[in-house]
Amino acid sequence: MERYRMYDKLEKEKFKREILPFYISLIFFVFPIYGIIAGIYKFYVLWLTIGGILSYVYLVHGKSRFFLAIAWICLLAYISYLTLYVAPPNILFMFYPTNIMIWKFNDKLISVRFISFFMVINSCLFYIIFLSKYPDKVSILIFYTLCFGTFFIQRKVKELDEIKNERLRHNAYINALLAENERNRISRDLHDTLGHIFVTLKVKSELAVKLIERGNIKEAEKELSDIAEISKKSMAETRAIVTDLRFRTVSDVLKNIGDVLDGAGISHSMSINDDLDNYSSTIQGQVSMILQEGVNNIIKHSNAKNVKIILSTDKIKHDKKIHIIIEDDGVGFSKITGEELMSLRERVSLRNGEIKIIHQKNPTKIKASLRIENMEKEEKLKKLEFGGET
Image (tube, rainbow, N blue to C red; front, side, top):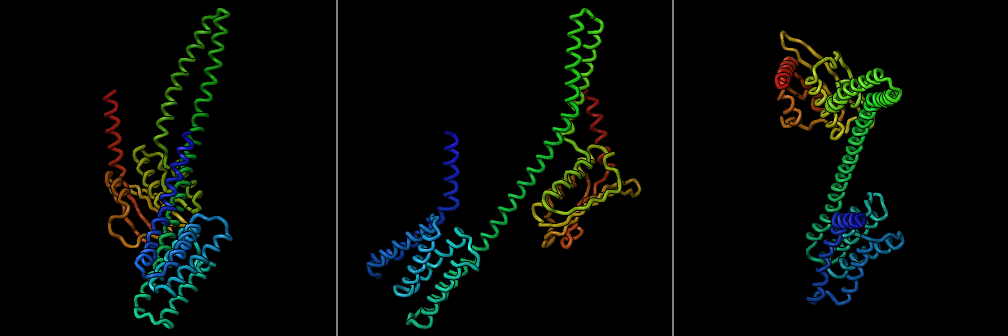
């Protein structure tokens, strides 16, 4: 029952998103109907209008290629007749075929539907401008421009929508890959650490039971003591695993970043001139955060094909710094306003660091610098506070 409710919900959302806009536009068919009621148009136009509406609705829902072609011809014929023989301003109804081409069939410029539409609307325009005696030809040119303008604007909107959806799908894939890598890492840690411990505990507990049954109490006590010691050790190792879930070394993060970039089809190179794994967890955490967020921004927004990461350290007097340079060949920044990379800027500034956009495009290069001394002092204070509490 729950499955059916979910299916109904999805169908309603699909209707609102994909079908409802087609039905809302049907309201414009009220104009020829009003013309009939007001006596401006002859009554037979009502039957033509009903045929036009049915053709349009079939184009929205139809599946048969043959009947879709018939409905398309009928719709163009209806609009052409209204334009040429009833009232030239009805050329505005050409926006109905543009809606169908863009949002239903996603037609390209070289397609049967677009070519037929192009021929019909231009034939109508040619007749009105050069062959008919209709006085207000400027308005017809404006309506003609609106129809074509609507087509190309909607086409651009559709393309941007498809790019956005593709990016969302790509980001979902990257997130799934990150989650899969994390699950695999946790699985390996649990298997390597706890698996051996549980086997040992099982063997020793069975041995202790047998020793007790034989009356060898001293040996049994020794085995039970070992079990207690192993249990204590396993608790410490379990805590270490839990801690490790929250903290990974810079090397682990770089390996994970490499996997993600590979999955995204982006070539990459990494250059490191210091063993950052030897630094404190606070420093490694900050470096890892900058690396992950910087690379995520590249994957989501830059359309880059190549990425270069450089990690280096230097010491000027008593001020030691870590420098992180991330470079890519993507679209870059159109202009620098100071509002870019706000999330990274806020995080880095909390550690008295700085982040700069060295080059805005071709290639795009950002550089983050963190002061090591400040973070090491902060971590020592935290450890002292923690020690004082315990």
